[in-house]
Image (cartoon, rainbow, N blue to C red):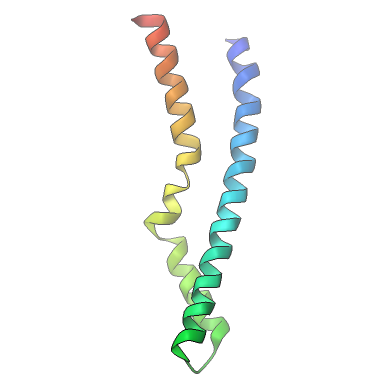
Length: 88
């Protein structure tokens, strides 16, 4: 059990750093797309409010939740590997 913890704690730290980096990058790309859309359409009004509304929609989107796969996929594969190794 302690051997698994010695492996899982650094893995969770690495996955957390990766998750934060991908989240920040994804939000940055979305912000760039919103600004490009604003400029392409030649919209008038408050650009910052438009971008903030778009980012608020993005925060609740399914695409944003897919980033959680950074945790689910590796930990799920490790759990399956442990199960198959020990019980099959």
